[in-house]
Length: 461
Image (cartoon, rainbow, N blue to C red; front, side, top):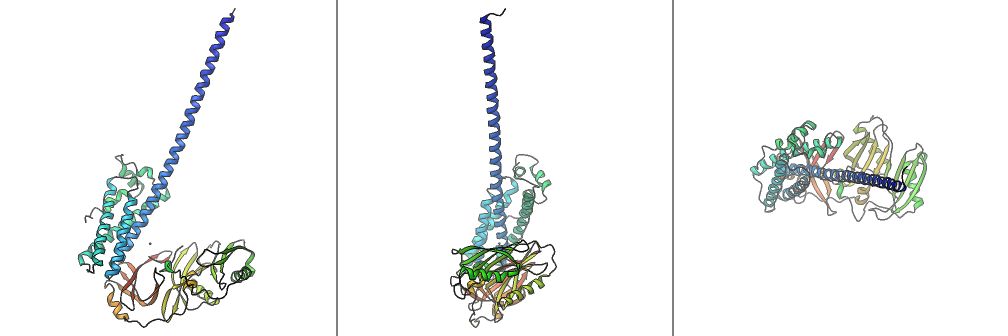
């Protein structure tokens, strides 16, 4: 028979065992919680790192693109002033590209020549810009070196664009790219992507030594707002103008969002629900009741119209709104909708400041959007000066390597909110298209633009 003392000891043993079991369970729970917390933090850190690497990489891609464009411009530029400005841009963009390259988690030989290339592009372009500033002409050797630098920049741009596609598609990750210590690093990367960081060294082994807008669209804000004519209107009048523009028979409900006062052009803004279930937005200027912005949404299933037909539809639409003498310039096509830039033409001079953009559906020609900020800011009748520099003289001043395909006169805006009358020359150098602008008064080369022909449209940089 168990004594009381034995029972007490047995009870204590059981209690101690329970305490130990509870302690073990608590410790396990703590370990699991710490493990989960650590794992969660590792995931958050990894995600933060991935985001940081992605940001640095895509900034690198943008700056390398700019380096290539400015090098191309430098090869076409034919004046010391514009050459110095362009080469200074090369110097700046190459420096920025190099700084973002240094933020990527790869410190291997695959990047050494890339960094070296960007560094020498920066240094060389800076030295040439100083030369231009001192009114020294570039020698043929200088131009040959720039040509070679441009060729390598095209290779680098293509390589980075391919890697960008691989990163976006998930075919390659930063985790794989950072396996520098692995002896099969280069092979792993090469297997994942034909053109990636592992190919950069090969690309440069011989080297030892820009919503889509058209040309000049970034310089269209004019404090005088010369095209904004008429008296101030109230909200109800603006609502009537919006209804007339969109078509009363298409509108189910129109809702006012009030007056926007801190914008470039003060406007009454409206949200619209159409009878077909689609939405639209429209802004009517307080002064004069002009359409500042309009945009409708719908899916376009088929592209039936050609670009030429869309251009003509846009012109007829503008004329129906009392806007004449416009011509289509540049365009971008996406998802069955083409956005066309129309510039004002006066006396055979293309006035790029007076810009209107239209969105045209390529299935039925419906106008889905309109933006008139440039036109409302700048439009007026100009008094053009008689050119001091003839067209022939201007032609003789541009780079003789430019194979001219068209020429005329254009008024271009500047970043100082002024306008310059220029001779406009469009031409080719090798397989690149350029626009060169020569001041009709001074003969100065005012600007050089690169024309980008893409499957979806024509753009400028």
